[in-house]
Image (cartoon, rainbow, N blue to C red; front, side, top):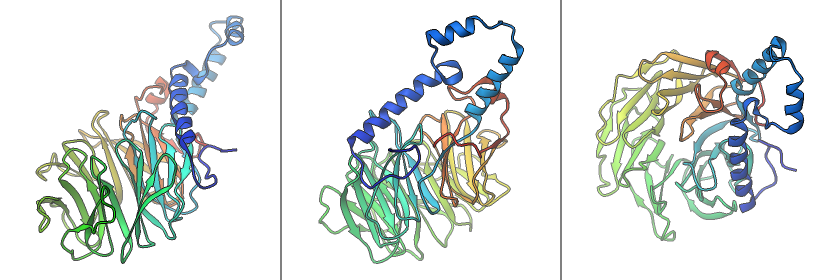
Length: 389
């Protein structure tokens, strides 16, 4: 029997994807019913016998709604720290989230409920990076076992394995899923043609240190955004002219630990104690960087909701107003540094992965299905609750 958020035996099938889609549908339906449970003839009859002005019952109902929407969904299953996670776009099968962990077992989950769908079995070392292609039919992972792998996200089976001479720290699909970039301790970024997997990869020039992050633009098939493990800044590479970077982001001396293509126009980065926002096509700043009172490991922007989230060494997940930089919420619950934070595509939730080996999915203030009381109580949220098991 599968339990939500718990690792199950290796391998998974299309039935798992179907269950995930059904869970999305059920969660949406339940959120539209006040109190989270559909009315039945029995409950309607019971409600009819209660005094309309029963203040005690009303208070209980408000308390229930607060508990239901204020706490995160907690996804267990990994046995070691989570170092990377990514939401898929909304697909015909629903929303998905993939996670990378030092336990060497990347996992696929339902992005709405946190339910475990499958584990990609095959790596023999820590997995540092995991991503999904646009339709969420393929997953890619980079590992300390000196390989990058591509997986069938419907069945969990390995499709390709690309050996390296050192640890692979970052992987990313091209917009059309025909190529994969991979980089790491070899100090070079490789481009694999997935339509010709047996062909040698194209390689960018060797750098002065290992690659820390690599993100292929989902809007411009020619641009890849990268950062290095011992140098500040972001280099933007054009695959049509690979000898030198097309342009760069000047982030100062601090190492860029997170690069997110937040929209077709904006790139979000985390470096040191700063969160910065850049024009994707030019590298110019969208606005002045926000200084955060802790070392930031990851940041994510949701323009639709006008929020950005950040996590790092202080073990909390912080939510800020994008326009003013004012802190909106402090989400407690993780028991170790927060290594990765990402918004879901429509911004109704955001997920965090931590040194404690858990993923927590937080509800965005003002999201559909959140009660008025929980919206009014935005501030410090205790994350000890378990809404995802």
